[in-house]
Amino acid sequence: MSDFFDALEARDPREREAALMAALPRQVAHAQAHSAAMREILQGVDAAGVTSRAALARLPVTRKHELFERQKALRAQDPFGGFAAVVRGPLMPRVYSSPGPIYEPEGTQRDYWRSARALYAAGFRAGDLVHNAFSYHMTPGAFIMESGAHAVGCTVFPAGTGQTEQQLQAIAELKPDAYTGTPSFLRILVEKALEMGSDIASLKKGLVGGEAFPPSLRDWFTAHGMDIYQSYATADLGLVAYETTAREGLVLDEGVIVEIVRPGTGDPVPEGEVGELVVTSLNPAYPLVRFGTGDLSAVLAGPCPTGRTNTRIKGWLGRADQTTKIRGMFVHPSQVADIARRFPEVVKARLVVSGEMASDQMTLKVEASSMPQGLDARIGEAIRDVTKLRGQVELLAPGTLPNDGKVIEDARSYK
Image (cartoon, rainbow, N blue to C red; front, side, top):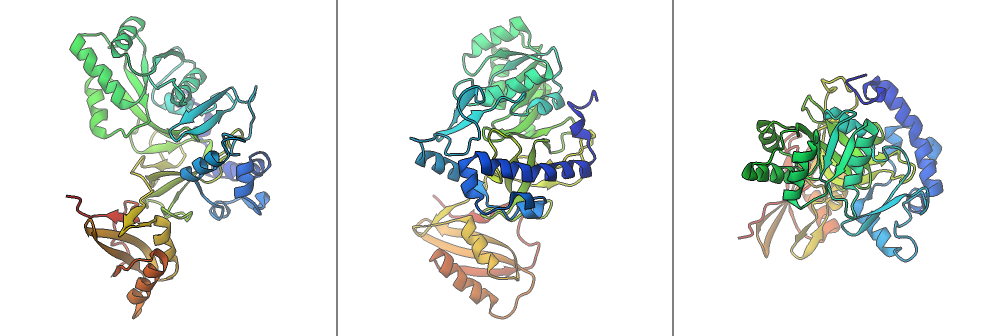
């Protein structure tokens, strides 16, 4: 097992799916019993019946803005908004704050955020010294990486952010093997080291997160002698997916159930289609069921060439919340989905807003499996009914619209 952090990464996919579907009803029941918010959201749901992805897809999606709104409404009674399944004390060693503010609890499980697999895939090994440049101030980023590094057997230098020259001195003298932090700060460190003549040659590998990590930047690090990989994690969910030496997408972590849904809905999309990443966490301390991340991604076909057998995703492809103001009215992706659901002929829909500010033009481009006479007029009536705005309708053959996850495209001129 030297190539993998644990045997779970190389399981037969059927064995993994059976294990996840066996864990799912237990987690739904646990969420209903121990999380007041999830109990309300999942009211009337028979947990014992949620044993398949089809059953999971029938449950409501809770998006990040809804989590924040619940927390804000209950600040005086419960700053977690009823989502935490543990209380302050020995079972909650830390509390974190993310922008909003949104408050997240930490539980007591070893490698609570499950980042060890990502670090191991990036080449981190027992005995390595890790220069951890994620912020230790309020947010959990630094602790996500630190707990995983400890699980791998690494020693951690808590560098945090800022104080570039002092960090370079520590790197030169401690000679860490690996870096964790944002890719932008690592670039700052490298450029400053080149300017000052600092010795950072010991840094040969790294795991980055928190920002987009384009191939051009990865190649820049490679040219400077560093093998850097990316992770996808959130403060709410911990690790969701991680890059491997294959450099072909991100492999899903073993502790989450991931769906890709059409933005504005909870409806799963076909494999390969871009949609919103929705995650069910198997974390008992913070049991989020169908949590909408607001991030776009898509499933990649086939297994990872490294031998890891879990599903792969393409990585971060943008944001799913495409709410747009048109002629003074907000139009949401969920409204476009509502229009599309009214017509069985509609395969896919995309609202395109064009023109100049104060002179908006709205066109609903619709892929249709068939085009009976008057379909465009009936869809136009539905647009007015749902959005209270008038819009044109353009009927298209299936497969015409781009596969980029966009439900609302703002193509207006802002000059």
